[in-house]
Length: 95
Image (cartoon, rainbow, N blue to C red; front, side):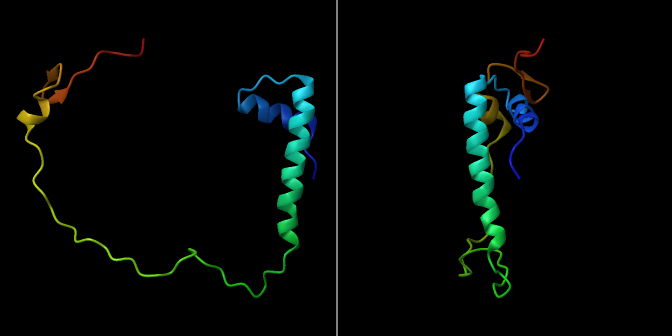
């Protein structure tokens, strides 16, 4: 299923790309090659292939979940430029 000009324009708009007509032709060809390559996967006979969740099923050792003491509020706010009611206070960045 080849990519239409309308679909390419929609993709370009979503990606915020301003494409020239030459770039549109180039990208359209590239997208069609990608789609053709992916459609070849549908031709594979996978009836005897079991679905898998991951490539490697080996058991991985996990570390123990041990609680460690955190940093005190005093130490946390020691280098803060401003603190307001126990929180970092930063200047407004959005108008």
